Image 1 (cartoon, rainbow, N blue to C red):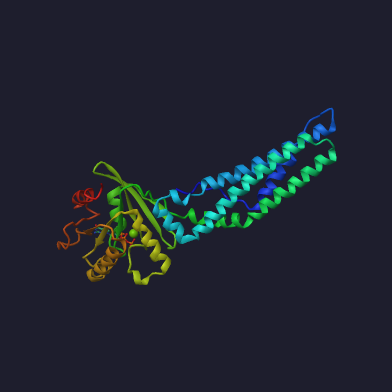
Image 2: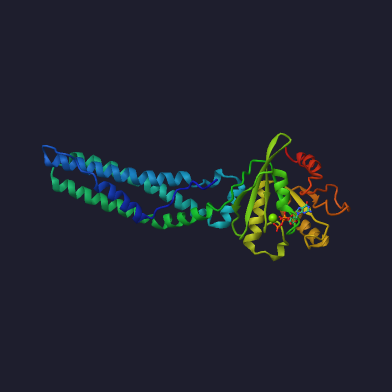
Length: 316
Ligand SMILES: Nc1nc2c(ncn2[C@@H]2O[C@H](COP(=O)(O)OP(=O)(O)OP(=O)(O)O)[C@@H](O)[C@H]2O)c(=O)[nH]1
Ligand SMILES: [Mg+2]
């Protein structure tokens, strides 16, 4: 989703890069030396301007605009860094780009009327000096945006506009197996910020619609009390996805959690996510006991049709 944000160069790197390009420009023979030098300086100024401004405007364009992105991403970003600081830094980059364009236009206009070689050279030196100081004045912003980029790139590639199911349940109850049984193909893996775990995203068609199913190991699988604040908040940002939770309960003892422990997690998820929840009994091939209306086996495929019918009710 946000993997296409370009690397953010620091001020000095941008200065060096554009000066190096400019230094390679030489004008062929002109009968008058001042014409040759004037043309050379103008070309250098244009090169510095276009190299720098295209980098800066690309940055502004490729960084997400907070107002336009889905609340899920906005909340994630809000957890990662100060959004106001982010907006100010982006607008300073925009400002620098505009200033450099103005400065370059101005010097090119003045170069046209410059007669003596020494005047032309002075204008060029002044231009280089002013250009550098504009660039250096946004160095802190570039450095900050560079770290924002590293954060933003960690936001998982969830499509918040697809109907979504979040698989939840205590460890070992069969969440990953259910995801595979529903989606067939091997899921896409994405890191999830603030946790050491990755999430898995699979797709299938239910009721004629493409849906997204997300397995969230380490995220929706243990009591909230055991989590730090960042983890809690990152769980809450899942709320913005407005998915339906598939809550797996394993009554066989195979997962080594009692049904009571599993109920407790169920209650917590119900309260914190406020999403609709479909309760699903897992591993029904291992026991004849039916504790839930919907009982499935990811191993044998029993009950999968019934589960899909239920899921269809939540795919609007
Ligand atoms: N017999 C049987 N075993 C199952 C079924 N579903 C999962 N298992 C087994 O249960 C174990 C845990 O399954 P996973 O799908 O990895 O469970 P999980 O909830 O993703 O586990 P964590 O990611 O560790 O939380 C594995 O050994 C699976 O083979 C099922 O329907 N029937
Ligand atoms: Mg798993």
